[in-house]
Length: 320
Ligand code: FES
Image (cartoon, rainbow, N blue to C red):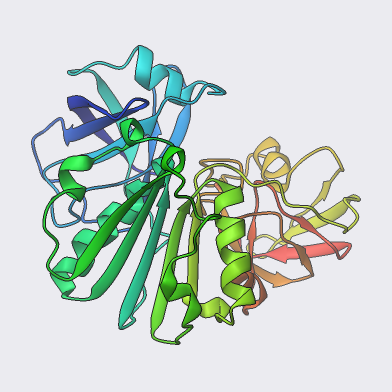
């Protein structure tokens, strides 16, 4: 994976718990183009790699903006950014990847909860540019938690933004957006937030008759996928060389391949980012990732997340 050298150009407080960071390429060149919904890998000096959604205006490539929440349960990424990262530090990042793209529709409902606002905010910029109608609902605990307010408080021409505070009695559970009651093929719902928030929204949309193809979501924390499939040993075969490797119960496909000097594009290692998705030539996949939709998991050819998914069949052949 090609890495890009960047410098931290600015950091700003965004509500009580978040920091916005702008990153510029150290050589002053524009950064790669990106689209709303994209994320990058950030390689931190403490050897941790984390994925963060890009936010702000996707037409802006002189710098990238991220917004990072201070996570009490941080495994090192958020804590490092909040406590140690400073303006002027240099880092490496990946080029943007997008598994949460805006698809063509006539109308959009955007739901952002907490720090899940980051990719959603970039979508409002794109929809304004495309002159598409949208309604944004941004759910926070309290007013003090609102991030990126300077973007959200501007006058949108094609959309509206409503900020809903839990401590004022406004939550997704206390009141669903009215638009949920009118399912329409040309109306898409995009959501990003904690797994519980998104699961609840999805359940309600499904109950009210929305088709799966109209619902798009991005988890920013790993979701534990329950699987009733056996996690027995199986074998993985590489299409390019015909090599076959045993994958024991306690190792992922990625681990086995790396141990055998096979390069695997890895990033989150939690089934969230899509970096390791690889085409399946034959065999049955036990999908454990959360980056693919149910539709994508059923589509042919299938793709397997090598960092977490397993095989239901005794052998699986992959296009590596
Ligand atoms: S490394 Fe991110 S999905 Fe596998």
